[in-house]
Length: 213
Image 1 (cartoon, rainbow, N blue to C red):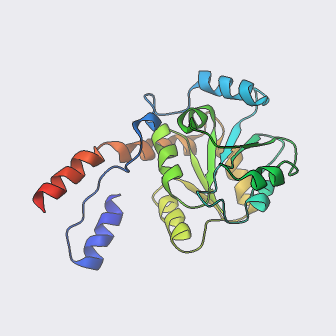
Image 2: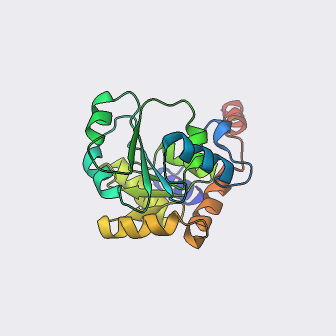
């Protein structure tokens, strides 16, 4: 983001440039948002209520930060909570008893499809998964961020209007309801600002930098 580049210039006294986040092109949504057909397909595949939003939950590569407790807070009767557990069989087992409406998924290689079929991503680190969601046109809500760089990144992205941040459980549920609505102005704004990050080719940018060096 340009504001982060400005900080880098100020702190280092050196030039700083902005490039799009380096992600797979599979996440870039042609229409800038979730697709109704993929939403219906995902609900049918996991046996979810077709009229309820799907909240996709990611806790990063380590699955850290009190995942079971966090999912317990996120889960609510008004939506289906879809949790990415990767190859962590112990986590999947632990989440099986959290409550109704919670679906714990193992390793997936179709994350772009899952994102376009969901209504909202809840995450805790402002990392790669958040970037992929922004590219896919999926609103991002951060909750219980990891200490250090996780919290700093979450707060900065929310400040820039790219994501939202829930500071407690009351804010969490209010924001889930707001951001998962198809007509949410807040979600539409986040999607628009998120998509604007992907207007340059990071590979071409790095090639130019390497040539100049």
